[in-house]
Length: 270
Image 1 (tube, rainbow, N blue to C red):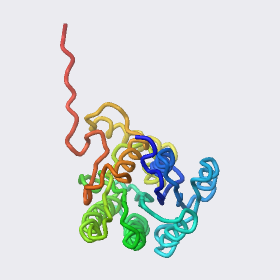
Image 2: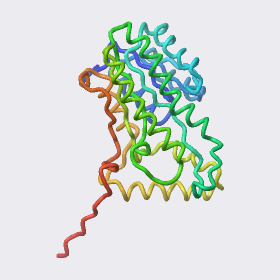
Image 3: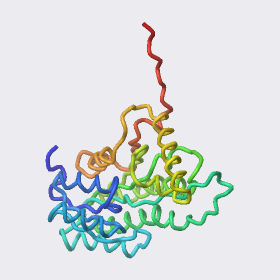
Image 4: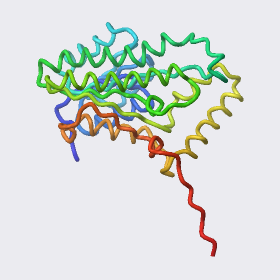
């Protein structure tokens, strides 16, 4: 479709890089005007400048609800409204060799960004949308919030919380014609995974990330690699009118990973 989001205004948190940046660019291509929110000021300002008058950058740390609320005000002030809120900003946890070694030092930061930020973004966007005909709220979770596994326990718990919150908010906000859905990316190459290995030595962190990605590839039924653009396409679906009867859903975009482990058929011998 062409100009699927014409006339719509969106906020994308964590919009300066990775999945957020891909979503910003996809929304603009479909006619939306977008507020890019991020803590990375230089990257956010450069991206907004490169995209023209349809995009503005607003620095925001989503762990602070007041800063999240300011994003809604910016969207209304700069573009006259808010129709789509993408709560994408997130942080990973520190990888420990085993849970028994986890000091939980990053618990509050992870929960503040990944859960509180999503809740504040949903609430503040909904406050505006409830008085202006409804809208679409898209929360970014992860297959780590669906599928149990070892490592980064606080991160997994935070993403599971986003799923339960999204479904609950969808029920309550449906009265106001506000749709709330979640996307669960999996096996997408973004800088997020590398941040979980910051406590490792440089060479060790590279080997760790490579090993994790190889495991992901082996477990994924689809052979092709996922991209941030694949997640942006899912966000576009939830943002536009094609999903007007869809709310409270969690969409894994993961090459089939949560459906089950890959089955590699053997080549037939000639």
